[in-house]
Amino acid sequence: MKRSLPLAIVFIGGVVFFISYFVPHYISEEILQRQIMVEWIKVISLFAFVIGLYSLIHLHVNKIKRKVDNWQYSILTLSGIGVMFIVGILLPEKFNGGIQQGSIYDWIFMNLQVPLQATMFSLLAFYITSAAFRAFKARSVEATCLLLAAVVVMLGRVPLGETIRSITQGFLDFPKWTQWILDVPNTATKRAIMLGVALGMMATSLKIILGIERSWLGGSE
Amino acid sequence: MKKFFLNIVNLDRRWIFLMVAIVVSVPLFIPSNPPIVPARPVQELYDFIDALPEGSTIMVCFDYSPDSLAELNPMGRAICRHAFSKDINVIGMAFAWPSGSGLGQEVVSSAAKEYDKVQGKDWVYFGYKVGFAQMIIGMGKDIVKTVQADYRGESLKNMELFQEVKNYDDVSIVIVLAAGGTVQTYIYFVNTMYNRPVSAGVTAVMAADYYPYLQTGQLIGLLNGMKGAADYEKLINIKGLGTRGIPSQNWAHIMIIILIVVGNIAYLLEKKQTK
Image 1 (cartoon, rainbow over the protein chains, first blue to last red):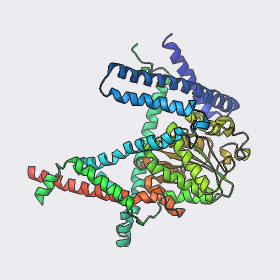
Image 2: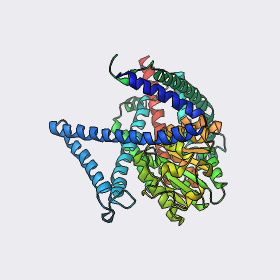
Image 3: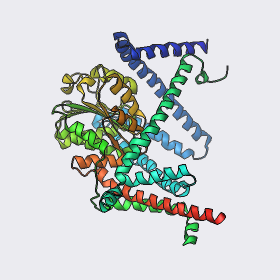
Image 4: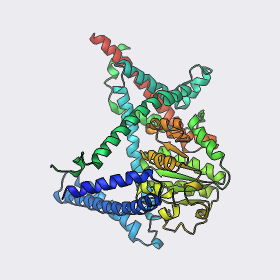
């Protein structure tokens, strides 16, 4: 029963919603997709949110209790949750509470979270440059092709490519070559990959719906 | 010279980090006028919006979080400015990421303010709503019933904009600004299921994934990274953050190319030496 019930739910849900996607009928469009699915997803997401929040708080409280390495950061995480909860939900609007523009919540988001997250992502530029210097080598014919394509695209997407084009009077047309690389070899390759992925997804979905693939249930038989 | 190339392979990466920091930050403080020629996919989206009649409505989806705002915020701002300048209504939303909600809100409301547009009549911002794919499917039937309220919690039912805009049939194009794989969801449902035009603006690292959709016509135009934003700004004749970021990108690309060339010369010399 413990395994049969989830399998049955997945089978019925999979088949019903698969058919409903292709049948433009009131029951499939209005009842199944709009009323049932939209409402159910909201409810399920809410449960997932509560579980996620509990798990996050539980994890960090335990870290603080056990004084594991860098436990001080857990205090920051919990303080962040607490502060955002207070200013976003509990604090009345007359004291700049709420989540609208100009509120304390909005100020913290725009002036703390935005620059911090943007900074984290910008680190990628540093690591990519370092990695390109050390690892981007013409070790084989394929690697050389990739390297040349990368150089062309990098030049074609910045003003230097335009400058070179105008200096050479269109002879070295990096922007045009870039567009060709993206339009032709890139599109062909991506399409092949997408078709492969789509077939794989269809096969996996069918296996899950039919109960052949059961690893998502967790545990062992 | 040979010794230089062989030694440079062991260059401490902190020097590379320092060089990146310099080439990215210094151009931001030096005013310049880089030559920007809009790419064809950017021109396609611009032409589509530009040809829309006054009073049309477009949807702009802010499916990204602050980490990608440097590339995607300027796109959103340029599109909203273009739309408002042509008296086209804008519906903004951020259904994919809760953290994108504040970003989209700032972009749409600040552009609306520039053109004296009225909230509820000329623009509406939904913010974040739970159930990403289901929201997109539901809006194809009835936007008001599906979304119910805007980001402030105000009911859509009485808003002037939604007396005319009922579902995707009343929306001219859905433009997705994304830092993840959400563009496909809009293609699957908005374009394939409801047969409405979809366009996208994405980060440069993921742009290559969307060229097949451009070729099939499932996407009308594509804004590719900061260059895409700068291209769009060029078309609407506004120097925004996209244009201001291009010199940094220019010098960063030049530096990476030089490092790749140097690294390869060193590699070939090393290979020759070991033979």
